[in-house]
Image (cartoon, rainbow, N blue to C red; front, top):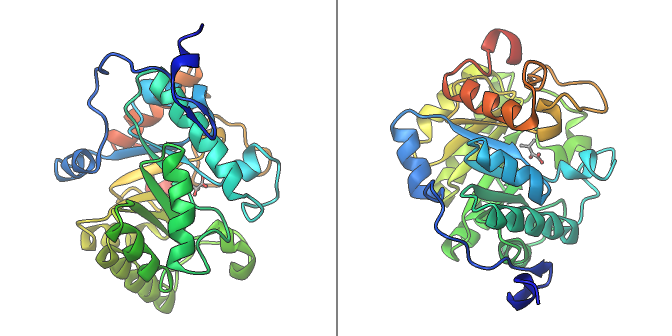
Length: 293
Ligand code: KIV
């Protein structure tokens, strides 16, 4: 009998047996708040399977995003719009099993996919429960304004929430493409209003995607309780996120301007991830002159 066959089953497989205590303390919301107040940048990287998640954790990445970008990089879809909740749960369970096996300590954020939270807070709660049961520590949802009551509903029921503003890929068709958001006064004011509402609703993290560097830096100052994680949003945010395949130089299409290929000068994927962690922490990535607008 293998060790696994004695472990309790989940709808997505078996849970590895309990491991000895890990060396690094598990990343938690209080730990992230501590890092923020100490001025230490938070690192986030996407991962979609057990092995990459474990390697990212070992390279020092604190938060792993099981992003619905997996629709594009794993499933070959044209956008994230076609990703299902079932697919998100499958990849979330794979990531969290990998972390457990490797005694990883990363905080796992899983994307609520398109259509899984739009109808009502109750629908969002049901979808979030699926991802939390697959092992996520936090769920992420896109958009502002209408999402604030949903965020409050989830947070009041014990589900940590990461919001996502700026370029929101699930609404790429309504936005007219992958464009920088919040460039003009009206756009910037709306983004600021939505961000403050989301913090007030209890969102503990906020991804800012393709937002001008000055705007995301000033929002970060205005959001002490909600850690801003930038992607194409300059270096003034509390942390940074990149899509794994992009930072390894494996983008199938055109590489976005805000990406740096960390594989170029390193000999292994783990070294590339460690270089990313170092560059975010020492402030050399992103370089506002190269990776921001
Ligand atoms: O799905 C994803 O990978 C994301 C990042 C681009 C932040 O949402």
